[in-house]
Image (cartoon, rainbow, N blue to C red; front, side, top):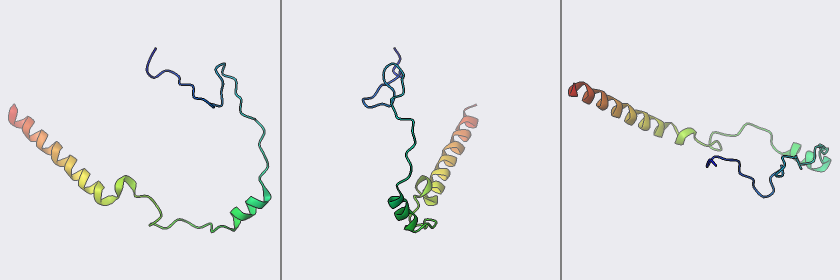
Amino acid sequence: MSIFGTIRLHGHPENSKGKNLMPQEELPPDPEWLEKWQKLPQKKPSHQALPPVAGGTRWSWWLSGGLGLIVFIGLILQLLSS
């Protein structure tokens, strides 16, 4: 058996026979909570609220520069060794 075999978790929506145990009917939205949701501010999040991509552009520049330097040194060493 592979370590990447199927894992069955307790409470998984399918039982061991593969039968779907989740209900198929879609419940109607609750009008009270739908009204509360619509009263919330529906605007685009500010830049301060958004998570930085890959730790922010400052880290991206340093990581890209460091990787470029390592590649450059590797190419120089490869040329010198032949």
